[in-house]
Length: 247
Image 1 (tube, helix red, strand yellow):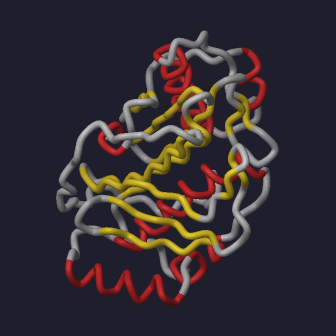
Image 2 (cartoon, one colour; image 1 turned 120 degrees about the vertical axis):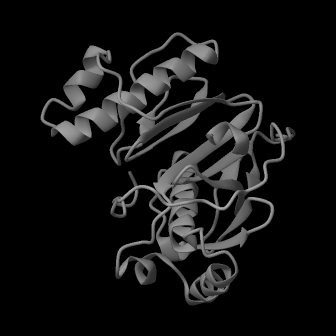
């Protein structure tokens, strides 16, 4: 599913169930020694995806440990991103020679719980969401906004090692072509001498899930998507509260 919104230059691995006998590296096992069962399953399965993605990228699989803010620490020469929600896990990786950063997120196509939208959005974004909801009611645009901002943060943090608040991002969603733009309201990072003021991403809503993806090419490279995908109207099928931001 997520491959439809990614360019050919990156590798994606996704699963919809947790494997019965997953294998982690000893260092990864140590990092979740005191985690509860839910966290252990999320952590383990998404790293199984990451190991497989590294292998498909032509790299020897290695431990993907969490950093100080929980971000995945990829081996040298690799950039990537991971996501997990109920019934879905995915990892996307690319060679740092071709890709500067990646940010992905997946969420259930369900409305945000009460009180979350004002905390993660700007007034003008809420106005836009109301118009989108009136025209395309089967997609929960508030959740898509959250999902897009999570992908932005995951793309931002490896470049800056700095926090980014929800109000520091202005999202503009294209409802017809599956694209979105994220304008930074703070000074953006430099990528090999070039200042980033915005991120461009793609989104999908199908199978009860909303997915977002940002892939920033290295300067001088362009990343064409695999193919154009029509965004079908999604039918919510999962009951799931909003995940804590900045996973």
